[in-house]
Picture 1: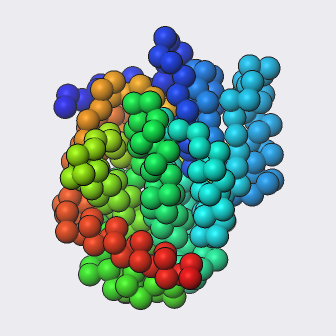
Picture 2: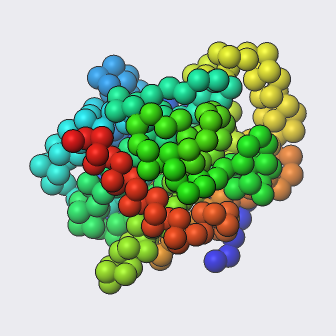
Length: 343
Ligand SMILES: NC(=O)c1ccc[n+]([C@@H]2O[C@H](COP(=O)([O-])OP(=O)(O)OC[C@H]3O[C@@H](n4cnc5c(N)ncnc54)[C@H](OP(=O)(O)O)[C@@H]3O)[C@@H](O)[C@H]2O)c1
């Protein structure tokens, strides 16, 4: 597929009929920007929020954006992605409501780079993997019937270039790698999916590798059953917001000076970053309009061409992300680990 060119992005408030978009990670950063732009373009949104306070805050922010035109186009069900019980409850409610989903956007993610000790989900899985990967596979499996009933349905999954050890970000520190998934076989209590010792940066890279493998595997399974679903995985590039919250909140709290210097260099001097607004526009575009006629699995990545110049183009994921055997194994073991933890 041809590259889409520099700095064209976003959804359009054109004649495209409104879509029903279900989004995780829509309360902050890239997802919040996408949510604002999607509402502005007339789409209907269901944004899963970790708790009632987050849902209230988001409702207020988006009501301000959409004004009186919100007209019931926003729902904010509670879904704490670090708790399989909360995810199951939310999925059950959505299935009962039975509203078809046109675009399922799995975008939530966290990292706690620099931490020496693992944090744990409600069921005892390492938190990065629990939120970024396990939660999203559970949602995908449970909500797939609603997605397949949607109009020209598409699945969008937010990954990151760091999943790929050959990229600039992926080269720094320990590379992503799932080994033989010994940690996932172990289940709760394993610090890493490969069974190795905890490393927060690698856990994040591994989770983003899982996002790609899961996306590819779902598309492959459906194709094998004679069904087709466009699956768009993407990487937003480096997005460092100016606000104190967001994706780098943990790193900032651990190393305020180092992070401030990193932001100054990468964002302000070398201009290697995407703005949250533009990354949000890319996500909103993938959820609705771009590519206009997607087929199969695609991976899109925002790549630095030079200072202030990023190009969003169809790309090749890493070698490991392209392994069908690993994708199948990860899917099966994830489903088994989740089922065992929920017994
Ligand atoms: N920023 C970057 O440089 C960058 C680069 C490559 C890829 N990405 C990916 O882009 C995606 C969005 O990142 P971002 O930069 O927009 O980060 P962000 O501002 O921190 O947003 C993360 C979102 O995930 C949600 N989330 C985290 N834990 C949750 C939980 N337990 N339950 C429910 N929701 C939860 C957050 O909810 P709360 O608002 O409640 O915290 C928030 O809406 C992530 O998948 C990330 O891996 C980011």
